Image (tube, rainbow, N blue to C red; front, side, top):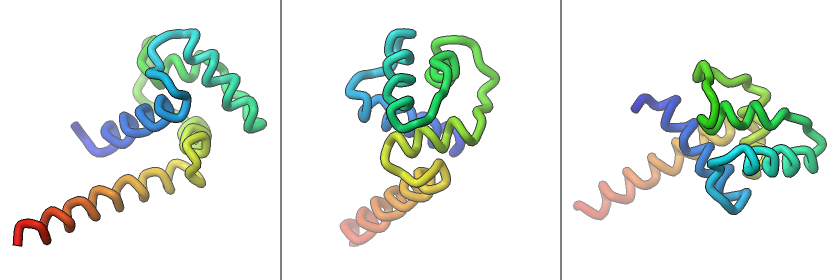
Length: 101
């Protein structure tokens, strides 16, 4: 799995965890849209259906959508989410490296 796809999957997991349920239906996307709306941001639930693979998508997502989902998960933006994820992986790698020696 390439890095971008893995990061998107981690964002899906983070959003699901924050919402408190695995997002697997249109109703869940409606709930997510309502939660995002509380942040003062309006994103159509159809966008979330595409993001979570419930309907066909091109695999490309607008940065506005990714930034919004990252903000929902308490990150500044999508770049901050990626940076945090990569830093966690580096920390785990280094921790394992020190454990082996």
